[in-house]
Image (tube, helix red, strand yellow):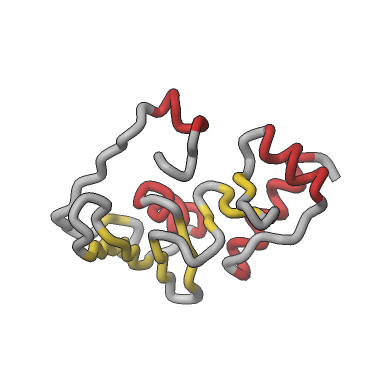
Length: 131
């Protein structure tokens, strides 16, 4: 199975179960070098954007399951990838206040939230979990 097929397997597994598949260390090293996944300290997939292994800072509730993401942008990406409506819950990284945004019929409900990217996109892969 080539890296593209392994990536597809990762996304399919996250979509169905909310968890990544178990892969060999060799596969994980190759996928991380290809910026397809980020491996956590335990040697398993921590996230493959937009999906994250929970618990993670943003919880994504669909009608069928709970998923996780490391940032608000990815949380919306989870809903887009699944083609699903849902609710994203998290906390403001600045003040800690709860944030909840809803996607209904493919559109964002009115919300008073601001997304701020601390790191320029060109530098995201220096510490993808922080961006």
